[in-house]
Image 1 (cartoon, rainbow, N blue to C red):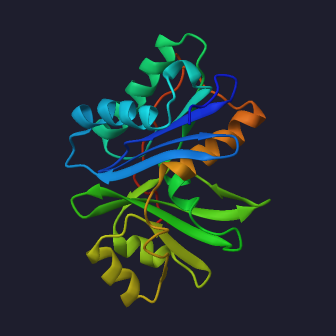
Image 2 (image 1 turned 60 degrees about the vertical axis):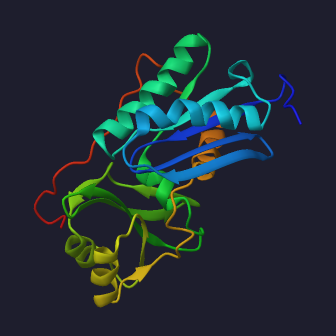
Amino acid sequence: MRVESSCAVILAIDTATRSISLALADERTLLAEVTWQSEYNHTTELAPAVEQILARAAVTTKDLTAVAVAIGPGSFTGVRIGLGFAKGLALARNDLPLIGVRTLDIAVRALPLDEGEAIAVIQAGRGRVVWAKYEMRNRKWEAADDGVVGTWDDVAKLATVRSVVVGEIDPVGMDVLQGNRVRVASSDQNVRRASRLVEIGWERWRRGEIDSAATLMPVYAHQPTSGEA
């Protein structure tokens, strides 16, 4: 069924890591979603996938109200490709707003609101991860920074009895976390899905928190300072 042009629709794009996810939703309904693991073929895979998800919902770029996009941290190339594609859509449609969302904010979104403390993680390569610690405040997950580069041992040391770790957890990470009796999110919660990105996009859209192609920039993780890890 075709979405009426008067109906607001947001496209969500997350290419920050090997896990790529796209979603399309109006204010009431998830219209389409696709998530897959890429061997860093983001450049060749993204545009056809966006075309397919739009076609599946019978939506055109003229129907879009905004584009929500993961802005990092993550793979330098992956983040740049997704953000560049989103900016291209915005520039082609002079009035199309962008909504930039931190990658770790998308990951932690999978957890229920009754979790008081979380550590969201994504892979950084070479045995490293990027993590950020989140606290639940006013029914929202809030983090002090964009993300810190570290190791699984760092994450395990940071965790408390209240913490749950969520995100891209590889077998090495799982061994370290379980060996330190750190709680880990379920396998479904650990998949970073664009349907969660589009939820954040709608919340920010309603609050008027939008970005522009001229000013939206990627965010990067930083090295830990003394006492952080």
